[in-house]
Image 1: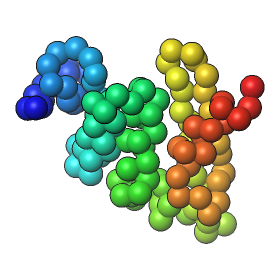
Image 2: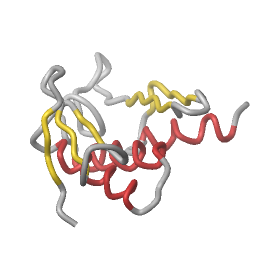
Image 3: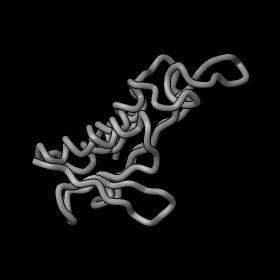
Length: 120
């Protein structure tokens, strides 16, 4: 299947979809972040839920260290430790999970994902 790329005229957003409509994966940056968008889009094409796609895409960026200021290996705090924060929200149910100040964790979005599933 050929994937078409088309620009969205808002703050330099780029989107990828086989044709206009759904499914759609969007990010605001290029470069290493494209791999995250591609992974999220692949998750959608395989029948994954939107929340699965978000977690997948964010996990790719966490693993690939897309940005040197965030994620493991990112900029340390005043105590010379790198702590991670993450938040994820299901736009249909409006359930959200958030975590902050995580140490010795590489997949913060995965931890945030289980918050609404484990806590009501």
